Amino acid sequence: MVKIAKLNKYSSHLFTKENIFLSINDSFKAVKSIKSSFFDFIIHDPPRFSFAPELYSLEFYKELFRILKSRGKMYHYVGTPGQKSGKNIPKGIVNRLLLSGFNKAYRDVKSQGVIALKF
Image (cartoon, rainbow, N blue to C red; front, side):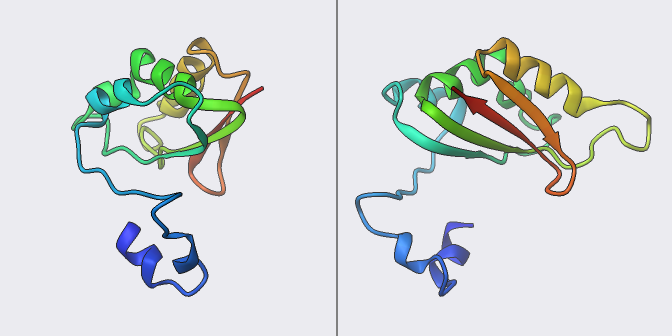
């Protein structure tokens, strides 16, 4: 994703040493080392639940809440899991985000994600 964004003429200017960095790490462990209220905006695009359930956990969401600044926003890509079987998996994600401290979390059907806000 970062490589593509660097090639895109509309986003290539964002890549300076001051504002975007690439870290290849275990997100579940690495998030604990980030200082509180560090990010204005977080994009969370984890692999499917069956590959990394910890990235959908209340514990991880609490860490994302902690590292997000006040008045920050998080976009969590979820896709359409459970749609064919009638399960509402995004609803569970929204509930856990609210339990983790986010003031508002809602499904954005158009982008197939969940948006969470910290006031």
